[in-house]
Image 1 (spheres, rainbow, N blue to C red):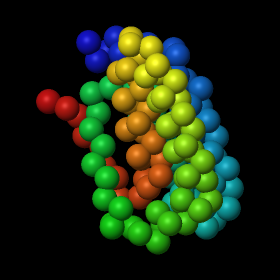
Image 2: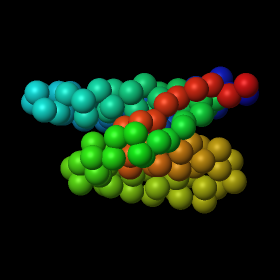
Image 3: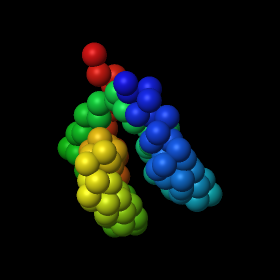
Length: 121
């Protein structure tokens, strides 16, 4: 079931959002100082392409300074975008699983440093 969800996600949301995060990562990597932030954007982009069946463990305290810088320079806007997209998906009954993925990604978008990914069993 998660494979079907991932394929539908990729078609309707994941391709555009994943490419957006990929280009954000490139933008961050243009500067030397932004490389750690770009690496986080690439990590999130990889998750956005195939989110079903993946668990995100957030640990804001692992890198609080980097997370605060991330929030100031774009994380808040990116998380807000996922929240709005999640609400739009949840308006329809069939879109609720996609909305839940958007809410998971919104939490990751606000503070990606220290987050780890794993698979559901």
